[in-house]
Image 1 (cartoon, rainbow, N blue to C red):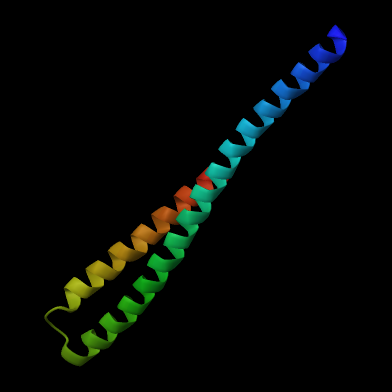
Image 2 (tube, rainbow, N blue to C red; image 1 turned 30 degrees about the horizontal axis):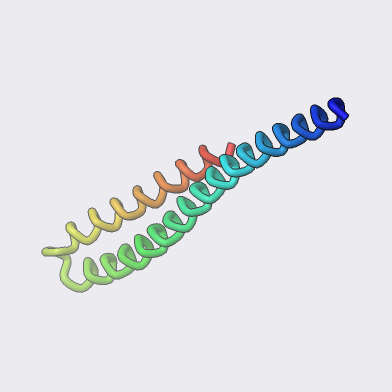
Length: 91
């Protein structure tokens, strides 16, 4: 009977460690997927803003165009950074 109890306790310890490992892996995957979602949103917003800015640049050739280009580049850079973080975390 003691052997069965020892075996059962060992199985419970293994299950507990596996669940802990699964939680860590699931959290890491969720964070990475969230980074990819944010990156997709930022890249999409950056592309739209870049298109609007190019239209404004052709229309006016001076003024808030430079600010629009800089903000679009910053959004695209933010999206690129989020993609890099997501890719690095999935390893």
